[in-house]
Image (cartoon, rainbow, N blue to C red; front, side, top):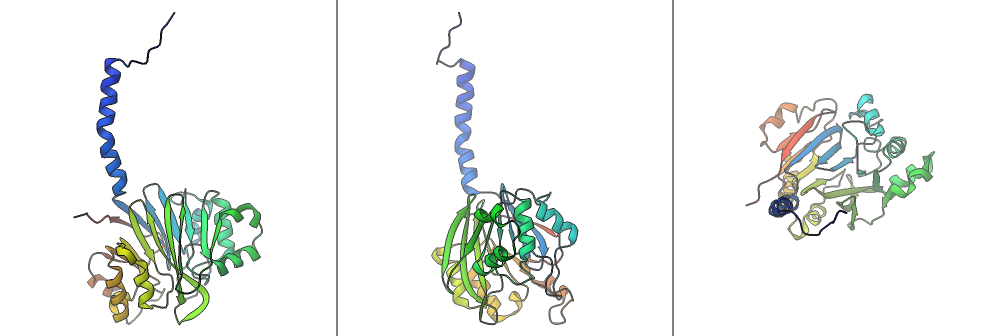
Length: 285
């Protein structure tokens, strides 16, 4: 008759001690977060942000933009909406506003059907467009989160361990419609900011970094480094990395592509669909 005991063998005790020794290091590594962020350009202002086990899309769900701006190529779009590599396991799809070079309801529906664990976060008017045109609304309704804020208001939500801060602003041109939402996303030890098509009211950007929040990656319009108000906003955000978005198809005479090479190394012009950038986390002092 065999006898089981709660007293571990010498080998088991040594193994347990070794495991206990590495636990503090594992905890420290988890608290710091991931050291690398993978940024994939989708088109126009659309990006995929990939940090460790977290993966989100921002302004990527569209296929028929303003003719001046690129849309996701068909092959890339099909993989994205179907959740195929490299777009598998998307946690969140974020929408800043409902203009067709940022969002299309039919593409959002295909994405939600093809990615059954993903959650869509979007301004209320974009959600209404999706609901009113949807063929399968009841299938994914509980995975659609509307942002219903007044101009100047903000909210915070947590999805799949990702903290999403939404800031309602006027759209550029001081328009209330469509609703524009800027996002500050905290995931895997990184803080990522996307401005959508904000009206560039400086105080709106100050609200994003209240209480000393440090921005690791800011996604802003391509002309920010070259204009007074853009530089002022970048000074407020003080990001470690800057992704420059919304560059048109035709090269601009005032902002030729070559002019971006004069910027410091932490600037990246995000122009080509499928372009991948590996960003390193800032070192703590």
